[in-house]
Amino acid sequence: MSEKIRILFVDDEPAYCRIFRSRIGRDPRFLVETAQSGEEALLRLQQFPADMVFTDLQMPFMDGIELMTEIKNRYPYLFVLILTGLDSTSQAVKAMKAGAYDYLLKPLDFDMVERAIETVCAHRSAFRSHATPDDAQRRGFSFENIIGQDRKMFEIYEKINQVAQTSATVLITGESGTGKELIAAAIHAKSSRKDGPFLQVNCAALSDGLVSSELFGHEKGAFTGAVGQKKGLFEQASGGTLFLDEIGDISMTTQVALLRILELGVFQRVGGTETLRADVRLICATNRDLARAVTEKQFREDLYYRINVVSLQAPPLRERTSDIPLLANYFLDRFRALSGKQIEGFTADAMELLCRYQWPGNCRELANIVEHAVVFSRNRMLSPGDFPELLRQPAQPKSSVTLTSPSTTLADVEASLIRRVLEEKQWNLKQAADALDIARGTLYGKMEKYSIRKP
Ligand SMILES: Nc1ncnc2c1ncn2[C@@H]1O[C@H](COP(=O)(O)OP(=O)(O)OP(=O)(O)O)[C@@H](O)[C@H]1O
Ligand SMILES: [Mg+2]
Image 1 (cartoon, rainbow, N blue to C red):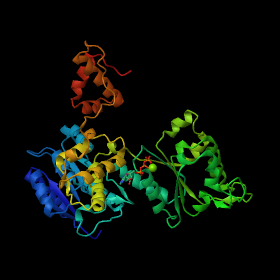
Image 2 (cartoon, rainbow, N blue to C red):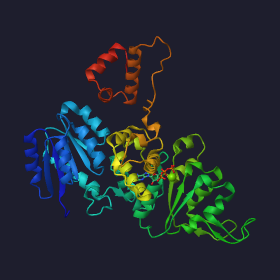
Image 3 (tube, rainbow, N blue to C red):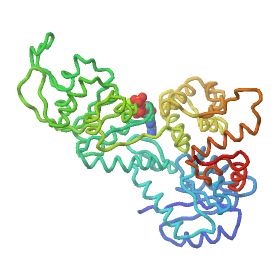
Image 4 (tube, rainbow, N blue to C red):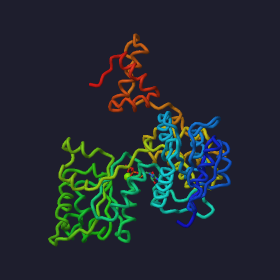
């Protein structure tokens, strides 16, 4: 690595700053700056374009989570690692949820620190950087048009790199708007077939009558209306990749036809006699639960196993909230350029609103909402008022206690909540206590009191 890795270390304890600077700073690969408060750290960052920030969790005035939130808002491309004592690991969990890349326990083990720095660097170099030199804060956070620096996304990038080396059929699952199409395109772009065609077909839009001819082509006169020979998608995509989107929506007839081509690797044009060999990498995507469709007999099991050779799951946006500021700024850049408006960014309130929302429509919904705000805003900074009312409504809890009778007591509610969290955490007491933000002993006591036992 030619350029030095820039690290900002934040701790209210001056001695800790000194030790970190001398231990990590003596490594020629690293350039270390320190700050003794969140406020100072933010000032430092204006002059020092860091690659990563280590911050103590407990600090007077602005604590580590507040600092991280502010950093993510201003420099969404920065990695933040949290330092915490053993006594506050539940806080560390909170920090991870709020977008920390990782957390390290104090007292610091400097070998661990070095390893953490190296992991961040390895992940960063998995990216292709589109940054311009004067855009130092935004170095390399896009992987083939996919934006995201959450761990779940790094796992996706790694998997894309791996499967791109093979020609195995890939199944991409995930909710609507999570970027399945981008992932498919990335696999193609990284593969040895990248100079071949990348063709895409929405299976839900294929009518039963036409599907065979669409996929396999037809000969002249094969059926009424077949005025000439036509090459199907499998032929057109030869040497490249065919992306079958919404595969969960294909009819039984089409499933049989697809199975044949996957099993034999050959096909014939409709009305033709010549046997053609398919030289195509298949990528399939669906937002349906295919395994369930199989048990419900709506999807052929044999076909499911054929397409599910390698599977990739695009995580929903609410499970990678640390990417929300990154994506929001990315979409802002995109729509700002289109609109020609001079919008500088998001106010802290606005960003908080975006980060709290559940995003049922995932990245697509975020893109739409940012676009709408850019078009209609008259301010230099986008503020909560620029976003739809919907975002301001509190999130609905997944399952809630039903207050069936007026005699429901606070104790009933508490017992029911504890039961629910325990079930959610598979009866792991530590995790449940953390989620409830109470001590494990307290949880024990309450379980006794309400006679809650693992079934
Ligand atoms: N990680 C991401 N980075 C940047 N843009 C993204 C990302 N994920 C999704 N998008 C954007 O969100 C929109 C929807 O993405 P995409 O079409 O890939 O979703 P999908 O999972 O295929 O959805 P559907 O199931 O509805 O077809 C696109 O405009 C895409 O550019
Ligand atoms: Mg799609």
